Image (cartoon, rainbow, N blue to C red):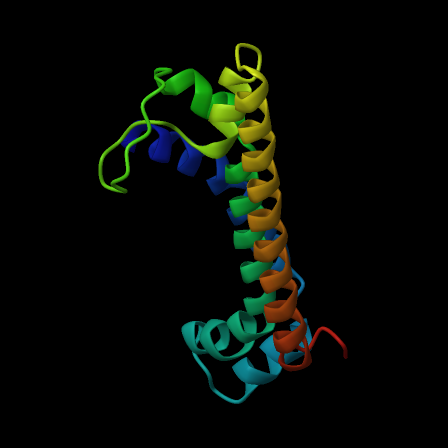
Length: 150
């Protein structure tokens, strides 16, 4: 499971950093120049002008990366060895993720097994929907403070 975690982190890191960088580049230059003109150091400009402007964008980038991590089924299926044992403990590795179970076991499942896999796909969809809804709420709440409306 550690290998899968490292693999997914490597896969989502470029998305998060690229979107965050683009958000920070969109910060109004007039605000940065005004802070510098008032005697702020470069770090103070970043901390008090750029980061508050881009906070909702960084949260959006993180949610986008999380959505990608949830969708990387085949990477997880390739790295994890397929086993049919489901462990009740969260600390015990094994069993794989929802997406990996659906991808690797759907073709050889019985009728009841297919129903269970479809139900787990529905659970995965609901989890993704809740994460995206939470991200939209956070972004909507932070949008009035970000300066994006100006």
